Image 1 (tube, rainbow, N blue to C red):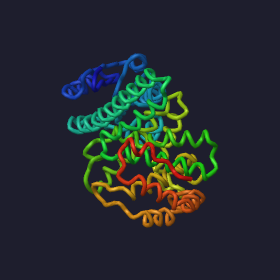
Image 2: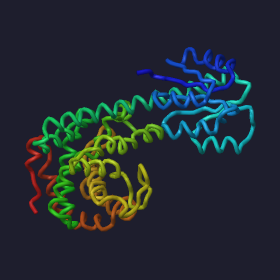
Image 3: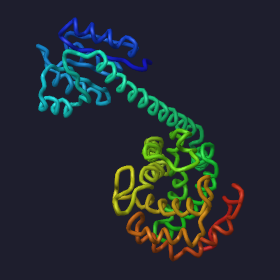
Image 4: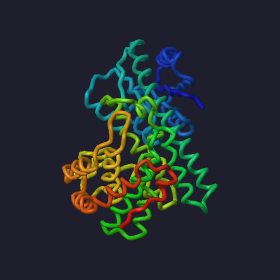
Length: 356
């Protein structure tokens, strides 16, 4: 598999030769086509990363080429080369799928810089895609091996993040137990309560795709680092979404939207109110409460009462007001559960239940 494969389409042999020379040290494979139809046919049967296409060609102009390539694979990056200084043309090219423009006569420095920047993006995307595919492969492998023991598979998945973030196992078990009791008081069926209980530990599974220097940073994240951290919701969804298991499907939904907010100011998609799945609305409250009440490298655990007050203050902003009211009404039982949990081991914690 080539890291960076490029197709050049231009009716000028000299231009193709020039662009190919410029790409000598950047591309693993460069394919040149004088006829745009030949280039399009090649792209149909080949994994291509970047296409550089001329606008003015006799048989088919660059706009049509861009449109055809975009219909084949909208992940292919396309640069249009043109001597026409026309903003309307550029807008149409963008609409059809181009991502950049270069003007003739070509500047070697500009050409190389633009391609180099696009290559960086493509290589990073491939790395993340391959990483996600590897994770999916491993998950599918485990599921096939233990299809008759689904609870063991769920437990194994929930444990994955423990190896990246110390204390995560205890966090996910507490979140699962408190989420189930909140689901019960909200009025969900016993089946739905069980789904919440078994799926909620997967809410942060996407963090296994986050780089260590961000995930394990002992201090406040920069804006750029936080934007990367937010992607764990999408990574988690991608890892779980294609499963046939109802628990993993629910886990995918929770992973994707447990950081959405009631007021629509959450991430990754800004869902609002009851557009956010009830499972995610439940887990979001419990996840925040447990995080506040737990020691972290960057903070000490809050008092239960202080954490509860933040949850109440965040009603109608971060959290579903109905769920906040229920959470508050059973807070004594929740506090009692946390006191009994204390410094319990993994095995001991798994056996501790609510008294209600």
